Image (cartoon, rainbow, N blue to C red; front, side):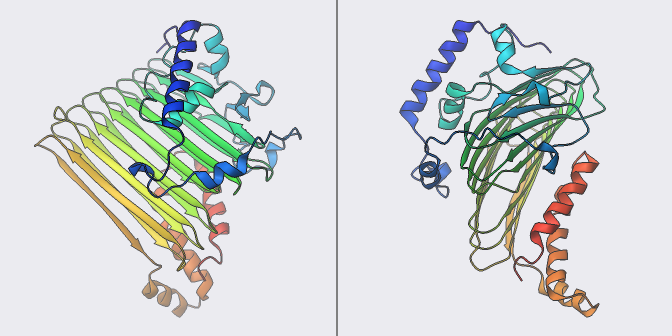
Length: 409
């Protein structure tokens, strides 16, 4: 699959239209129903005109930065070729360079900024990002790692991932914050999964607690394609992850899995949309949250079944574990069905650590804090076990276990 040519004047027009739309919409507020529980204003005030740090990067010290696979590194939204290594047999590199040479014409075709202010902001402001083109029939043995590092200030990464017909690949997006300066990440990824493709996407977010992170993943699926997303949110003070997947081809299958861990006064918001546009499509969604301290979690999951999407099979679940009295979760699973021959279910649960299970473990000689930690870590297993990269599964399990140790005790 090759990106169409986008002339410079069309890119300029796209940016201008996005800027004008953002000027009209402005940053979303809690008056917007879709942002009812998430207030950006306090975090935006702390950002000011902060600039990124010029200190040398020590990526080796970061737990998800040294994966042994091809990677593209971006520092404060700009491509860092000296830290990058391109994958063999795949076109992958700077989106900015591709646009300058007249390529990557599908930018802006899928992530619509008419109703989404932050998509508009990203479209108007992005300087660079990743372009990944996976050819028809190409099967990648190693993941492609897109690593975004912030040292402070604002960054607007824009990514375009094009997976050709019958291709197979895993793409990892990692967002890390170095230092304690406030930073604002506003990221958009457009991903096209061609007919018959099998694509896994893994997003890891572990920025500092002074960070505001907003990210949109917009997926367009062809016929008989299989797309899987794992979205892991561990860091940042305020997080809003949005995923919008359109199952545009007959027989498309989509799986969304998410895990969010919030402590202290962290706020993590997940807004997902699964749009079944054609018949015989299937979706499975499972998001799990663990909240401690005075943290706040939000889950809003929409499943839309269009009139043309007969024989749709869709399952959506959201499960939350509260470890303290101060933790809060607002959850809203939602079905919008306009077809009559479908099977769709959804539900949400909120609870505490099972005291009977704690008692059982304590009766076997395990201390109270350790028993609670073991059960909490076990709660994450259903999400972590599906991650396709073993080293990431292992490191995530270790990092989550360390962070949960002693929480809620």
